[in-house]
Amino acid sequence: MMLDGKVAIITGAGGGIGREIALAMAMAGAKVVVNDIGASLTGEGETSATPGQQTVAIIQQRGGQAVANTDSVAGWDSARRIVQSAMDSFGRLDIVVNNAGILRDQIFHKMSETEWRAVVDVHLHGSFFVSRAAAEPFRAQGSGAFVHMTSTSGLIGNFGQANYSAAKLGILALSKSIALDMQRFGVRSNCIAPFAWSRMTSSIPAETPEQKARVAKLQAMGPEKNAPLAVFLASDAAREVTGQVFAPRMNEIFLFSQPRPVRSVHRGEGWTPEAIAEQALPALRSHFLPLDRSPDVFSWDPI
Image (tube, rainbow, N blue to C red; front, side, top):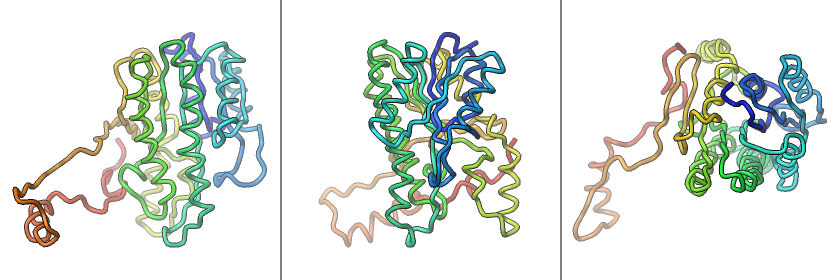
């Protein structure tokens, strides 16, 4: 019972990875606020409380404690209501998992303002709003753990996801900033880049043989494979872990690097554009990074 006595908020917990994390945290002893607005994958259409209530019902059937919340993460006031739900229901808050998300995939030169704003609002603004609201009880009690969902689409790159990739890489910077700013209050912040077949990945094209092979690999990785790492990062066993990025992939766990200088050049008299072209470029070129996508970097089958 690694989370015995703790209270957790999991956003987007009506299905997929969020639901599995909520179930795992409840079974580890946490009391859980299951947040989900019950919208479609794109965040459009009518909303429903049913997905979140289903997760709550499963937790209660297994002997755990949970309440449902249908407030949106994408608003300052509604995010504060999510946090208040934990305080009203259970009297405290120890863990926030920022998992809620939508997709509006579109090739960059065709992406609309609406497609851009909708995704950034939920992923990046939502992660900030919920975290900012939770910072107040965390600071007051001198403890707390954030687990944010990033993505290899942002960490590495992907086609047709400029909005999603930008938001997910922004979440990495947000998590690092939280880790730095709130370390003195005993608050930790880490990221998970999950690999799993879920509603969020079901939109991946599967038309060519290569695409079909990629989807088949993803389908073999259930969303539950990400839950143990989330439980660990939320627990006191991870009290010294903060500002990091992990990726669970089937039975593998990866620790991601973060941008650091890889090579430098120096010219005592300073640089001109011509000197950069003639001297700096040849010296730096061998360390340029290719235009990789996640399948290029993770080219082997999940273990």
